[in-house]
Length: 457
Image (cartoon, rainbow, N blue to C red; front, side):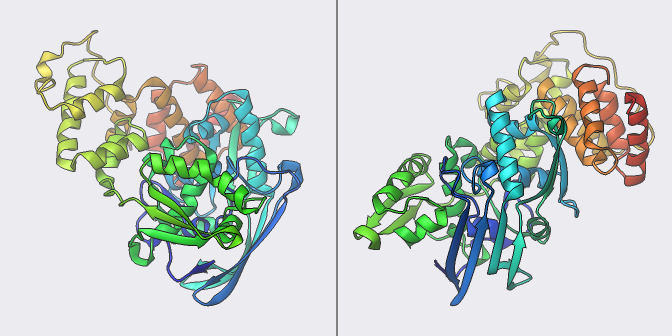
């Protein structure tokens, strides 16, 4: 595999990112299923005229080398790591339920088991990169794991993951350090979320790692040998007809979604080459617009869509109108759907907030915020949180708990805390206010101590 350009650029973290080395090396097989005996692969290639190698050693107890769903799980962990502010220790706290929701999977028993095995593969697989890991402008040799540690409550007692399981996940040290140094590339989460099958999402991640050249320029055509690409994709059966069959569904979906214009096969037999024709790159959504819409409850893919379709001035005006209508006491059944309708309105349907009479009595004025929580940013965060639908409020609250308290509560403490929130024994808005007011480390430690006492932990 030859490469004289890099598929990423240094810069600010985008709404969703992939670590640059991971994006290029293709650590996870695109196949949805592999034999459990497939526990090792080796890939030699050339970078700027120099020989490089990546070696993977998996564990048969978890289903062989990382593959299929592991692409989605690994990206979800990266997204959470970014959301947590890229902490130096690489640690994030979440729940199995939240992780499945972030991936977009059904929260049924089947997927909890699949998630458990996926986390096991990502934790118990070792990679060795020889002159193939980019760090500080040089090619380095590294041995690493995608995930360093995973602590799951309840699993130690013989039970599997479920909706209440708290996960304390430590991202691999080398990957976390690379993300913190901004050795990253953007991902189109709107496109990623629209892809239905894990193999397609895995192939998209690989292709996008080769679409971006040094400095952020994009290529329109990428050509590679068929058997060489089979090695990169970690396809087990490398007979040419089998490789084409494995890739066929993913190619069709990427063409349907407008990411690829065409896929050509050139030549015959083992000497065949694949020629990918990329569609023109869509303009990137305005990050300020994405952040604004996310703060008012839209999911990241939806926020990206409308931040790409409308300019920031329009979005600010429509969000202000949306907020004014809610301030009048109007209570839509679906706040996110209502916000989207306000954004898209061009007929003056929502021109006058006075036309929206409240469906119920206007709530009493919010009491003055406690000391330390009166800053404008905290007030905005509280207002945005209250504007979310109830399920999103609860999930966001749990995420913020993990961000603020991750160094001060054990996984079992988080499990008790989340149970109290689920059962209504702990009032959500009061806790959210406390989290906003106690985000500094010393204050967070004091809040954690009070919560442990309150919960009997």
